[in-house]
Image (cartoon, rainbow, N blue to C red):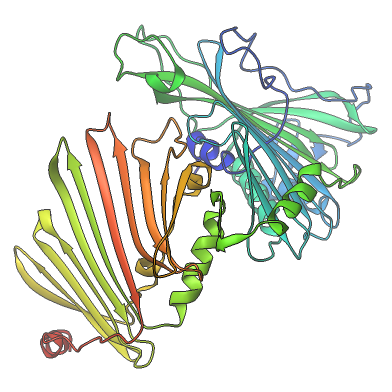
Length: 496
């Protein structure tokens, strides 16, 4: 299935950079000439096709695609054992005005270990970040996140291979090649002495929204720039999506109305040549991290600076200890409780017994699961009665983690030292993406010097603060009793 344009935009908001289809930083109030500029072939020295007959490149003829997998394999082979540079850009326009420009450039070493990502996020409603970077050399990984003038660095706590990132980009290309419907091909010159072709087509899964008068919107289109070897220099797609008017800063009369936005996305590939230059921020980032004096993992005297480091530290503590956790989720609309869920989870690391109970207050539903190393059972009680299932295992790990919102590292943090050696941190003013309909307004947690979070409270708000969701968590480690439930025999009989 085709990845929707918005999904690609969301992905790019995590790692972004790219081309010049639209100039980043352009005045958003000024109209742009077109959202479908022609591909620029680069070296356009006239050179006739070198292939005889109808064959122009592997998998490509004068009348359309041949065996599409031949084109994909030829492109992939030309990247093997070479430094690769992949650019991606997604530009959204509304009535000729750029409302979002998200771009990314990824450089991958020939060894598939070295990786550099540099990204810019210009007015994207899907992310609060304005820039993002990542560096890996096979032995250390560094992340750089920017919101306005604030820069935060973090290490991932391990190594990261660049290979999977390249594989993901290649799979996107493969899916597009297999999907596109051929319209035409033309010789547009040469690049590095090789015949270059512009292939045009359409994507049957692309979207188009006629306006209110019935006129057709922008025509979804696909453009590929391919040389005679089968190397795909670039792809470009254009389609339309519906977005809330508030996200494109329109003056629509209906504030809740949706408008049609044109999305132009471009991906470029280049291999070999060019140096694998390490950006200046890499040295700066490692120096900042090395110079930090942590009060607890991820927290300095200045506040919370690395949510990932804190989360990893907490998970290391609970991974091998017997533990019990209580969670409560409450959602209110205008002060009225519309949803409530309580979770109790426990794990005894000595006996291997595990227990999870979930109670949904507004739905009159309770699910309870118990297991040891040999297997387990689940009981479901609702308005229609009681039922049982046999389980191969019961996992409690998902309930034990305490994942703080990533952007909390950019918030205002108050650090309070408690009498027992622990600290209470309260984070407010957490940056929010325009797309977020429910966002963190406040986070408070109690943590010890190991990074173990024993209490956690979060408040999320939305819809003009009429909608509020609160989460409360307490975690206790040490001797934990996981008693055999009184319904266990009934469950065995019902599932035999």
